[in-house]
Length: 396
Image (cartoon, rainbow, N blue to C red; front, side):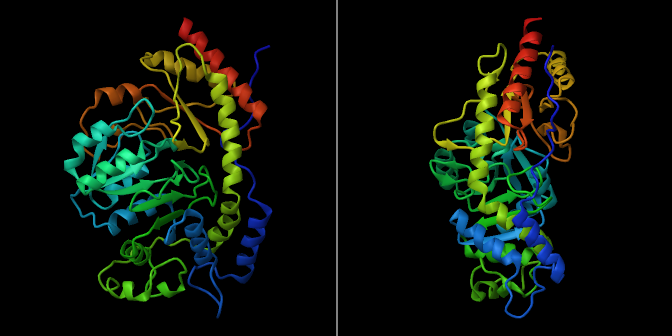
């Protein structure tokens, strides 16, 4: 009998009991707004910022409404103006070019390698086009961060890191988000901590931290934060920085704080599942494994593989056959955006130039979520199904 997987690719683990109790405490006292505190009280949001800054080894942290809002706030804070060009990955998700467009700037797309990281040679060729790089660590793949930062520092290009898929990952032991001027994280349901929506922004630059805080809608209540610079820094920018409100509330912060304390354990669990799936796929005819560099400590919350140079109808046949057996795969090479998948030419509000080698790679990228609700047996079953169906179509 042909085995079929019956689990869900979108079901997350329950919110921990400690987080539920913290959320109930906020609901009972009713002070959900981050600045609505009782005398002597520290808000859940301020405590979250303080704790995440310490966890990441950063001086400053700001909690906001979403990862996309964090990205747009970072762009505003570093001084991107309407019409400016901003370098970014051709292989990324829509909120990244969307954040650039939201400040009326122009994305300049940089190619992707078979390792699914930004093409540093293509970046070098385009470095003189912009003064800011929004680097997306798409699907948790870290490029050679040493080389990238050397290139950007030499060219005077400011790096903003999109770490939506790399919270808890590291390059040569340095946590993702700590190399650039600003690191931005997502707390959306399918990321590494779950508050439905939410974002976090970290930096060591006091002026960027103050500007981001004012931009997020702090009014003149910045003294109620715990992970921001002193009031003298705010005095220099408080009259000239607009309020673009996007604060996080105390309810989401209360849910997140216990989850962040468990992040390292969760990372280990994701990587156990990733390793089982990768081992099961390795050696499949026609399928290319995305090899991880030794310098990278990754978080395997999703897995990608390549069907390079396959015809479109054969790729869709693989997706159909796997779906019939309960395995939900996403294809970033499809001509039309489907769900979260899309190519750089899908974002028609942004001009782009063709990149033939990048197009070849994008046409072959297959993506799959790896929820922690999967058991290791589930992972072995899923890998076996993919291996069987890819192999069958490849041999046709």
